[in-house]
Image (cartoon, rainbow, N blue to C red; front, side, top):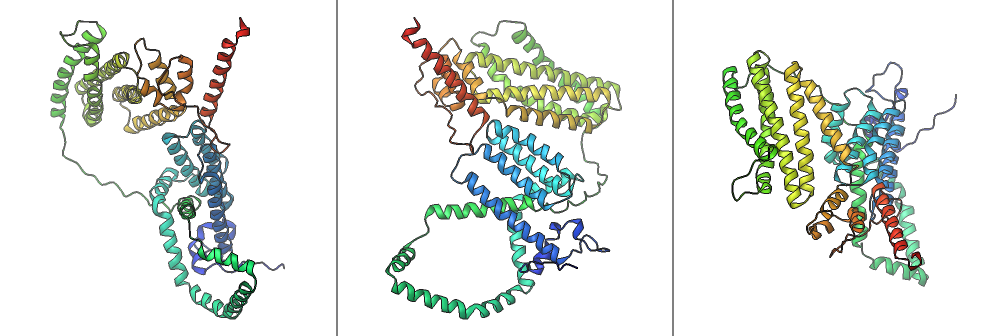
Length: 492
């Protein structure tokens, strides 16, 4: 029988506490999952430490002192690969597909939203790859909650484990055994430095050297990277079972108060609906001294807040409406008026953009208004069909996340620049220039002389490569080639 080679040196406490690194094959027959083979657990612990060191080195190579782009997707894939290596026998394809979908926005353009999507996708994929699909979302939420301080707490736990395991006493014995050879080596080295002027000069320089700010910054980067990577390759702690819900009736509206409220609210809202129908849709003349832009600006955002409050009121009134047809009719009328109110807010925003131009805030407001209108429509359909709240919640989450994910692939800077530069009056040149390099193609194509034209997107290498920057650069090169052909005197 071949003798098993065991790597010594892993503290017993560490081997015991890091049982999660052992696979099912490491469990002796008849032992429970909590009872692991210490030798196998130690080997797995060393593998985890090696993975952590390798990922920290990769993070340093990819990110330190460099812009991000393609490197983010590569690093996320490396983290997931490390988790898969540490969790053999688990599912691989589906977590990899989740990470691929989450990485596409950052490949398009690294920004706050795409980074958030990549981070969330990485958390879900590593949790799925390490522990399967059981309670996936709850375990992912646990990991997200533990992520900021998990590395620190586990490091403290490791130190306490080493202390309790008695390994410090073993280290003292090793130090006593090595005291004579180490002391002799130091004395011999000192004599050689004194005898050799070259070694003496090197030693003198080293003694005068100080830790530079860049070195300290790099050390802090390594520590921070390790604290962030460790919770990802160490699966989240088991999620606790949800506490049973107790029956609790909170004070709130009654069926009668809901009915009276719906009647009053519908009457009040009908005044605003009628005025919008007259001024916005019907083309009625506004009061003297008031422009369409002023009417639009004063109502767009307050009406959006009103529509959101209407949606919350509809959710509170829905249990009563399910038991009374008249209440359901009033609630549907209330929701229909608020959908019309949101559409009026969209029209007001469009009128305001026509008068004053497009900005990031107005783009975001338009998207948000459209989402509110669709959400209120879904709420009305839920009330009409008597569907459960879970139906509305799932579709609202899909609608919101799908919209955010799609926005990652839209160059809003280019859209805003194109809209403002096509205006017949003088555009806000400084705002267009502040849009940055992603609007450079539209600025060049407009042919307008701006005081501070945005520069071209810079791609220094494959690490910070992004599809949007590459696309804008290709378009700029095409425009410059076309302008050169037009300016060539030999072209007639």
